Length: 391
Length: 241
Image (cartoon, rainbow over all chains, first blue to last red; front, side):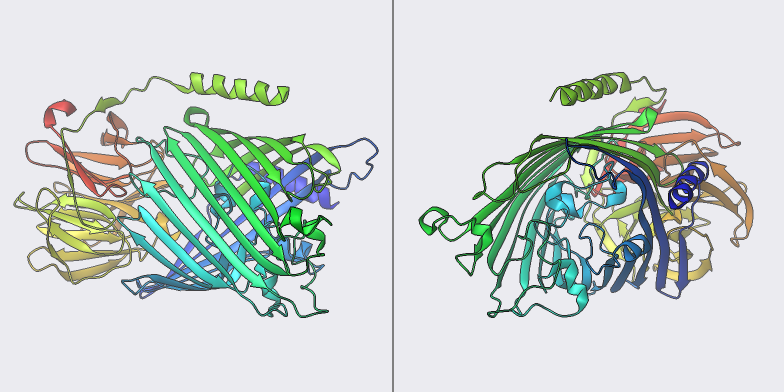
């Protein structure tokens, strides 16, 4: 019955793609915008031999979001965004890092000449792939490295930002609880430590927006290059553990010990053609030399740390006459250098952008070239097709 | 891997077939100048023709020389100025987010009158363009996209008519010149001339990044301002013939 309702909703969306329902409420110099987003898809997986669970072959409601964005004069901004679909699916208390339910709840002060200050919960200034709004992507899933299992995508804290030279140079730096999406439980872990994140971005010849697709067919080549890093040292008292679900699928999102994450990304767009390249590396030094992340290797071999890394290459073309996006992605992933093997994943995406509305029909297909044992997936290929509308 | 090569091949074929001919005339600018106006979002020529009025996304109004060098700045601070035009020797500015039209005295840059114009849409989908038809004494207020609407108002900003306009992906500026309404599109990089039924008469393809405003001078020379580049691009009247 549930599948039937979602299927009918999907059909209905196709016929009402001109639905525009964003509203702006004005009271003096206080401006409030109300908007939302709904997306739903059908997912099919090709299971590996001897795998029987077909529970992921289904219709799914990915987003049912509403968003309030406010501005008071030119000095205050606030944002509140939540996803009802995630609140329902996260009843287990384990927020999905890519879809955590509460997405933004923050206030920014932009009245200082020196810098802007943002306080609250929201996206962290790290990784181009993570910072691109989902609604602007032809894909149904982000690259694995930016899905929230290697590093958090959102957290509670304070961010300082500064733009220079007509936004060609931008710096962001901040301090956060360090538990990522799990910070919403309201308490830190027993280490009481924070995580520090910084990003520097250079764009030329003009400012670059976080976009995968060059929908505007830029008339001149635009590019951006950025470096970013984050650091946390969390030493849990003996007998203490992290809150359930906070360490991510591979146990490296937060570790008991010292963790550095550093990365660089490059993006280019011209005449509808766009490219994004991104590399990230994690160096984790567990406080306990017997930590499972060191894979029982001798210290002279592991030198007390493990390395995790990923490379993502992505290219897209927006075919304006057909209002269509074609995109390809390659991912190389090594979850832990102390465990043999690595993963290579290929993805292709097609998106049709409806004219006169902010809606897209999207299909994403991906398959694995190589797979490391740590990934431990039950399927070899997956296709996902569906519809999204921002209103 | 074979699947990947196959899809890559299809992707290449699509790109090749995407290059299509267009009936827009490609025109090239002959001169550029930079301005220090932050995030310029529209421009208009002063009555004397010796200076420019430029509005910015941050809600500021500047007067500059013809090269974009700032001469003075208004004390008025809005939220998001997106459009400006000169009408009856007064400046009219659209504050897109606030849904306000400010009437400004160009002599001292003070506000003479404020009009509130309601428009139900997203904060940045309000009126992005304003133009004045001096003969009919009518204002044209145009929303950016999703969908583009041309609203016609009298001088007291009472609505006369509304037209849904589907010819462009977006509209970033408007200008009334030689008895025709001209529109600028940022996403299509086009300037189009419209007839009385709002149908395109001529299209000009301008290779400028993020064009947000334009005007014609008395000689018919065209100037376009780019927001992201903070530059003025000048085209000789001859290229528009």
